[in-house]
Image (cartoon, rainbow over all chains, first blue to last red; front, top):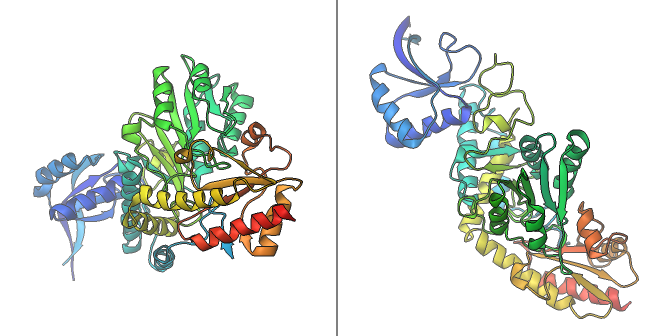
Length: 83
Length: 382
């Protein structure tokens, strides 16, 4: 098993409730991704973020906007994966 | 035991509620605190509970349902978060201390001006008095949806009209009605609805909260853990976090979610409340006219505006004596005294001896109600 850094889309939210609403929205629409702790390089402190592939941003943004899920920020960062 | 103290708490809960709490205690982490499987499961369940409560109360936004330990916490937070120094507030003599005392504190500490609308001889809110008191510039009207002493209902949509006409917000105490009387915040124009989970909703104690209309922005009452923005000096203002400092009672909320689902499966608040009201009406008709028994509330004049409470006294006896006799002689649980509603008792003339409050719930039966009627008759005849 090796550590690799993979470019990832990270969506952050103003509240944990908004994060859970994002997950609900994505599961209902079959959008890929999963919940992760907010990476330190995206935001200091704690909180939840949605991780997905960078190319998913447009579709994700449209879905969240349609469902009224508030988003704090979007970032693409290299996140650790084990392969 | 014949349990007729459902206005204090619905002691008998649907088995689904018990099962949900037990399951949650063995599986849920801390909602909104990290991304472990248990934390996410807790977060998902809490979100479903918000959605269920929003649907039940007619709140357009689930993230504007903020959970707290009970109605008292929610009312303190709403009132203290919306009223500022010197503001004018109108409330009513029907209120519980969970409204009266936060307002008294604001009057004492911030110079808030508090006016109290009265009631008629049957304990119904005097809407004309409330309209007279709600003068332009009034900041807030705080009103119960149903008296916890008499069960009398308040036309909160009409109160909202009067409040909004003078630019005031309306905070509704739905402690006695949530789950048993239909509420629709949006169509009724209600700004804040505070509820508790353990009464008409038949959920666990330690659950409750407020539903807040969009555009209404109370200041956070408690500040602390939020799960987000840890380096911010003050509590975040996003919804619902602004009104939810600290760990939520996810175990209790799992039970509340199960309870709301049971109510919906039972036909919703209208159906549940109709059944409870039917039992209370049977109780009222059984004790009304019994020599030596005085019944309070609106039953004689407006049955349809009564909830599921029958409050009474027996001539020559203190309410505590009657309640004790019912408990020790017939195994009937009820509530004597002042019910934390001093102005209501003062208005009814029961300030000294209180009243015996018999309150029906979803799990009561006609046989239990008839046994209570027989017991009251026997005590009155003794």
